[in-house]
Image (cartoon, rainbow, N blue to C red; front, top):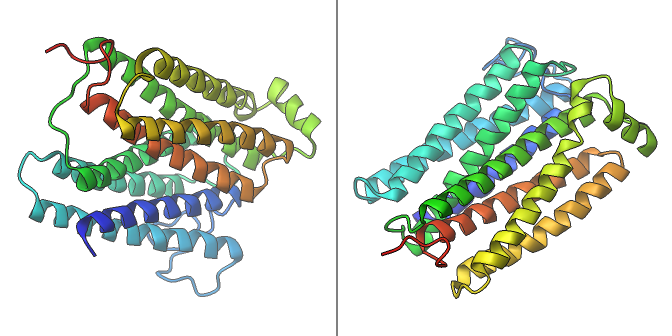
Length: 307
């Protein structure tokens, strides 16, 4: 297996581990190993596991393997690429974010921010967990992209272009964080009907329910922002990869919006929550690859740095 293919495999495997983690949260299995980490119920391998213990322990095993894979990826990149290479930098960030990911997961268990815990602390940590997950995927995606097509030389954006990109990236991260909080609210306070769910959104007693309404609003804001940017600044670009990535983003984003509505109507069943997160991960990765084209390859007089 080549380094390029291995980096793609690690990216795909990381997505799989993220989905397993979502299954742990959606099934309320986060406390399946008790307040023990890295042991499970005080044992290395649980001897009489319940279903929630099996789910949580499986997540720990898959997470442990991804750390090993990332370390192998990091060493491989450092042995084959020069100092100050952007590819080396991307591999370093993959390693950093996977370590932070593991530490956050351990913190959730050790501080008992799992199960039926509906505190503000858990919501904040869950949101930060998602942001770190997105940054991990971004680093991994850029690593694969640069191994595939070669690393870029320098940033080609003007000051205004950098500000626009920064705002859109922050909005995307906010969308992911709000989605994590929304999913937590769906898990802890499931509605028995669509009407009850709408009442929860309008006047729920818990802040997790009150925050759910912001997730679709942020999603619509991002969709509108991307449309405006593409229409006014990028629509005449002859960059084929840029245009291809944007078409994928637009199509998947529209589908995700409809899927999100369906998720609400069906009262957020676990399987739909998993698919919704999978689509979010894919859209984020393609968005990052699109941003890579915007930032490093100069696209329009409005965004391009003047020579």
